[in-house]
Length: 289
Image 1 (cartoon, rainbow, N blue to C red):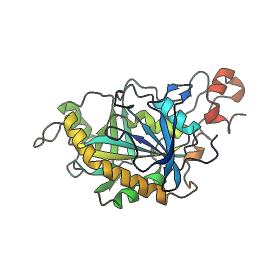
Image 2 (cartoon, rainbow, N blue to C red):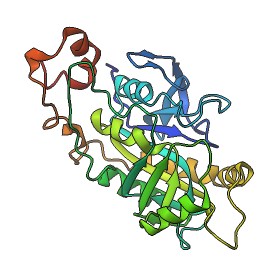
Image 3 (cartoon, rainbow, N blue to C red):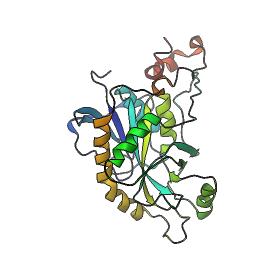
């Protein structure tokens, strides 16, 4: 384990492939039991504290939402000592008042993906993780305050639906999601949020609204150019918010995220195959000796 814990890990999504201001950086190109990470993890100092950054879609954005190695990414950040993780995502708005250029800190999540591994636990070790509230409320509150300091328009709360992608929605799909009361739509927060909970890492999302998806009758349907344009405009906001958050993070966590597995493991320790115990030791060693 590292000598000094990582105060904050950041996963950058579309349009954010590096973190300005990181100093004394080192790259960690890690192999995990779940494969390689999307890109080398850059660890450095930001506002005097240790911070890690990972480009979710790889250098040059060559990994689709379905193909992101979510388990490898979260496992590697855990191995490096990360306790808190902020995901920076692009999203489409499903409501009029969440406009392009705004930032949303969602508090609920609907997983509508179909083709992704959603858990670390397999091969003879079962865990039923609790995700009634899938985002860390403590970290989300700190993130909201950090964005407010930038002067950007930020909305606290709202449900985020995650679709498989990489295609955008049809109008029928978009309108159905609106009837469900969903606020924003994206492609990468699931299973990332669930894996972070299994790894007992605090997790929050800074979702940048880039478009009105395809439901808005007076707006042009979402395109890649539209997404990239807004993200480029918001990059400085994301960077400044990260600086603000790191400066104001408390040294210790006061949430329950670091005990998420305490009541989730159901397999009797003696029934866990040795190979599985070894594979998942990083996650379960404080519960299974």
